Amino acid sequence: MRKINPFKPTAGAEPPVLAGRDTVLDDFEIGIEEGIGAPGRLMRITGPRGSGKTVLLTELGDIARRHGWRVVDVTAAEHLPEMICRRLEKTDALDYSVELDLMVVKAKAQKEEPHRHEDVYEVLSRVTGKLTEKDKGLLVTIDEIQDASVEDVREIAVAIQHLIRERRNIALVFAGLTAGVMNLLGEDGPTFLRRAYPEELDTIPVDEVEAALKATFEKSGVCIGMDALATAADSTAGYAYLIQLVGYYVWRAAQVRTGGELDAISMEDVERGIVSARREFERTVLETAIAHLPKMAMEYLLAMTKDKRASSTGEIANRLGVPASSLSTTRKLLVSRQVIEPTARGYVDFSIPFMREYLTKNREALLARYGVEG
Ligand SMILES: Nc1ncnc2c1ncn2[C@@H]1O[C@H](COP(=O)(O)OP(=O)(O)OP(=O)(O)O)[C@@H](O)[C@H]1O
Ligand SMILES: [Mg+2]
Image (cartoon, rainbow, N blue to C red; front, side, top):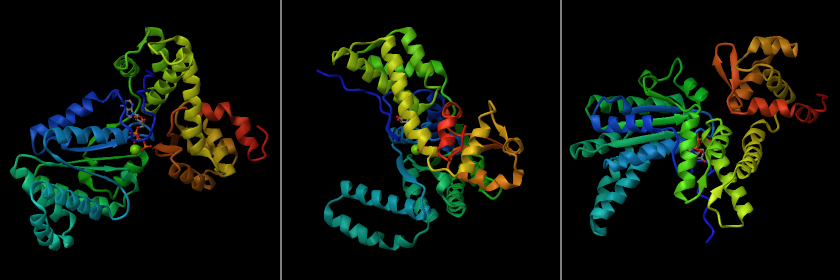
């Protein structure tokens, strides 16, 4: 029988083996066990697109559930506090339907009606009150928090801070793009959230990538040699999405070669797989990020490729032969499109791995789109 490809190169999809997250999972679990005030109960996860933020929220939710906690997952949008309240009320109704027969549910639902006008603090207080009595708790996860308004985030932060003071079992984990989250928690952001335990999802160490790839292949009864494994792991640059992409296409190359009876991965499969994975990554991530940019924005990015690391915004203006002040709209556009991010005052860097290499390699073709010779 044909073996199923175990890799999951899809946004939000749980990977077959989670690489490089042991410490953060342990810290969170300790936070649940240690009780009120433990640092793991208030956590912020930041990282670029495809670094594994959503997957990590799901894993933390699983840990909380294993400890009998309730979990409410939301993705930031307008009216975030109301969304949290609605979700909690819906699951409340579901819980009752398990416990009670339909008549009682109806009666309860009617009784619950006045809660409609409760604010987020009141709803969280009611829910965590009941849970804390039973020695359980509530985990709230917020994904894509950079898209929330400061007011909404402050309202939720104030409510949770109060509940912690009231000794309720509550945990909050929020995730978002690094620059966006820093912006949100910046000068007028809620101080309480600025002190959240920070987990920046930068590159996963190559030995942990190797271990995850090896374990994934072996779980499916497929072996892979040390050299092939090292080459595959190296090509991911420790970037979560690429771990799945490389694994997926290496598997596929091997399947094509063997015609279905897959039991081992060769170096040739790895080399072919890496080429396909890189092509897919360029198409879905890099090309999507820079499609339809104005000409000046493209020139700005190409000027950045001269640096090996973060670029000085003043130096970029020099290279383009224009005053620095004339580039602020372009810079803002590129930051809002998540192609670049500020790393310090007056410095920017690419937010996506391999963007620099991609731009350098395709410089002429990219400029030709704007009728410019490279
Ligand atoms: N620790 C990990 N080990 C291996 N693969 C992972 C890990 N974390 C995430 N992945 C894989 O990486 C891909 C991206 O994960 P995820 O959607 O969680 O990223 P994200 O940071 O939320 O991205 P976005 O900013 O686009 O929402 C998925 O294919 C997922 O299976
Ligand atoms: Mg995500």
